[in-house]
Image (cartoon, rainbow, N blue to C red; front, side, top):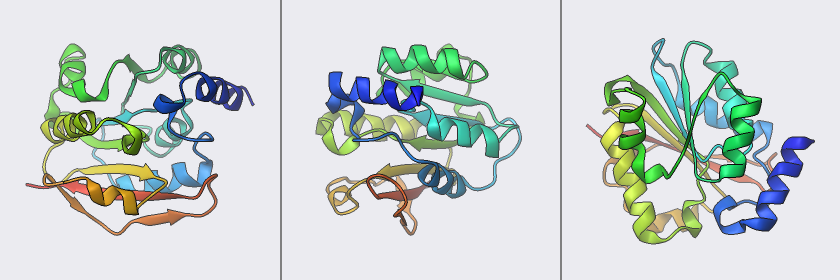
Length: 188
């Protein structure tokens, strides 16, 4: 309940940054986690825009041997994540600066096993989304997954994903609102 209240408080205050009308549901978190696939022990999972942490909790459950680094821009969510999920590393900052964040943590890109994102990319400025995709491409090794969710699969056609190979999307009807999981593989 506190998670939902925290979400709605930030939705009212910063709707453009939040980019959703409700926190991600458990079915969406499970679908995204399934799209990550198998990881080697100690490969790092990078989560962009964890919000209140519903996907984060699922990642921790499914990948207990993989550290999670959550990059969140909203300071209220950062504070809450650090309090509620002290076992993960929470970075307050922009997703377009992933390389700098990982360098600060002494994590080489070769240790990154997956990037998962709940960022509201469709409502962000186009130059920022371009910078975020470039940043993901810089730190994600070839053959590794990038998993994004969206509420509008059709609107995603505006993005040029040259560094990523798409896989079949997965619709999650039991989410409010229904969402689409878009899995990609970093091209070699």
